[in-house]
Image (cartoon, rainbow, N blue to C red; front, side, top):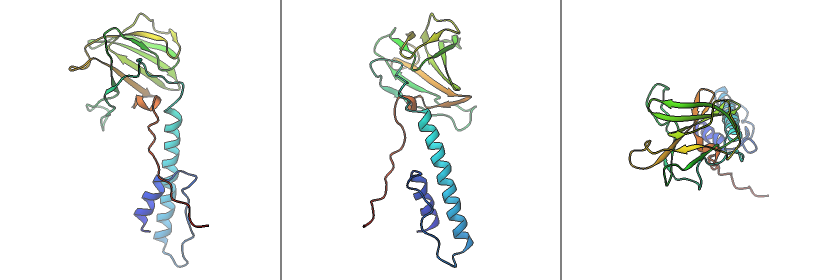
Length: 198
């Protein structure tokens, strides 16, 4: 197998399957050995990042902020650079103005107010994770403790030009992350090799 193909194959396998494989034949060049070591390191880094993302995302304690489960009208599309335009959250459709918005996880209200021309509420869930919702009218005060599923406000019209939608953004520290990873399992499917002959 050529080194680039080996690298691609190793990056797609979980840690339990990915392994350096058989020993290189005697006399193999140091370039092949270095490529194999780099491939193994890359697979380990990829596995660790995937494991961390899976631990953070698809948490069973997170709930959709609208009920019933809303359609996603616009997905997460972060900009390549923090200062460029992009979509730093998801837009969720709702049927009627005034629909209740609930906290997807327990936390503390970190902000309630108007940003530019839209009412916003932000909830700090701990561990560096914060959810923000707009446009949402809320009577809660900064510092209020909320539980998962608790109503935190009412969604107002005005965010999506062609439909009624709620914008939900999630930050992990200072980085925007895909909110859907906390309510859906977004991990990629991995094909495992067929078992060999006995």
